[in-house]
Length: 331
Image (cartoon, rainbow, N blue to C red; front, side, top):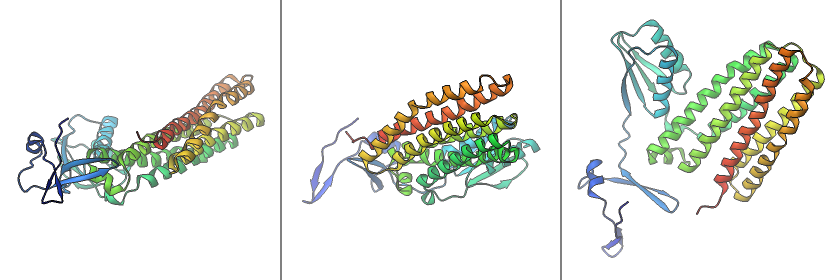
């Protein structure tokens, strides 16, 4: 940290010098422009944004399957606008993996293909993205998936179960977009200004979106388990629905707290959500007692369902913790 004394020039203009070492590292010289980004009682200083496209070239020699998919996802989340994937000879499997990965990401398109490279470009304008809307959409899809997964289980509806499993890809696409926006806001204060959300709030939304994405994963898991289960007793189904309702209530209250602008109201909602998490254990014991005497395989699979529903409540509790931190007074 360095300190500088604020001076007055011309009788009305405040001026302050910047460290020469920082100026040299960032190409700042006499006549250069810098940007000031106010954030509450702080102000960030950065070189003037050139609004240039961020491009990157990456060697994918030897990368196949899941490793190549993760590479594309990572480069997208890292904030590259143009991604050039190169190797002496791109084979058919690599092209297929790249296309599949691209389809799983919001705004990313293949714009060029040759024998030795594939070029991807993000076509979305970051200023048009709303991280608030994305998180709201993840919340809706994830909780709908959870309800439909349990419906598929109780009604032995394999078609609905498969539909839930497919919808998990929609949540993943939104999650990766939120992660991309969040990292862009951390790296570039101008990006945070473009999306109209303070960087601390971006962190809160990013953290909560991760919890919702995990809920969607458990919904897909329950749907997958339902494919291996036959009809279950009515009293077990009723107990599972009670556990589902209690778990989703925790998540809904926590998300309402996260989006609540009134600090005391948000804190009250978050505390209420956290208290309700404690009551989930009682429902767990009740369901466990009901399934204890069932067929061994059926009992084992249903225990996994109970575990997933309970974990969803825990994730809601995590969102509530984030909401409380967001609502807390600033020091």
